[in-house]
Amino acid sequence: GGTDCFSDAYIDKMKTLHDTLIKTESRVGYSFALEGDSKCQIKREDLWKCNIRRSGAFFQAVGILISKLNLGKDVSILEPGCGTGYLTEILAKIGCKVDSVDVSERYCQVGRDRSQYTTHRDDLVAVYHADIESYLNQCEKKYDVILFFESFHHIMNHYRVLEKIVQDHLSPNWKIVLAAESIYADREVGEYI
Image (cartoon, rainbow, N blue to C red):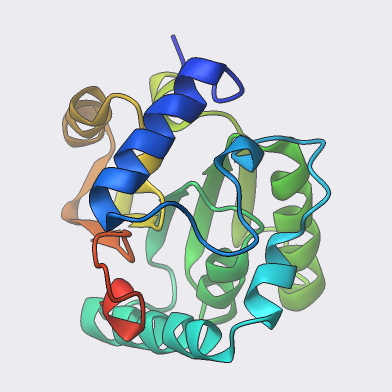
């Protein structure tokens, strides 16, 4: 079964993990209580607007990622923890076929709307409302790239998820990528590379 991302236990585990990884309390304007909360009033987009350097670092990291992985037309990608679909949208614009998964239905709807509006195609993006473990258990697809972008640290059972991916969901020329994980105390460009 999946993990209840709305439970106090999940939020406590994520806070502990996050604090351990970056050795800090939290980002300005962000509260761990908001993690996965569909009723929260803050918009992730508002966090990006207030920090130009962070936004620049994000786009720099995405450019490096696309270049280094040689991503492009018809590459099949699974993006667990897609959030509101920023990266999904960029990948679809260059012709990747992206299946995105997130635990927030609100974020999934934003991602669906964003990709449909910008690509005007139904065949490039599919957005699923689920935790990644549940999705992998019901999915039979194989992917060229499994791309965890700012999301791997949110998974409760890393080993079981990776095991399921390796056993059942990789194409012959596969890549598993963990990118932009919050592991640096100096959270500038280094947080993405």
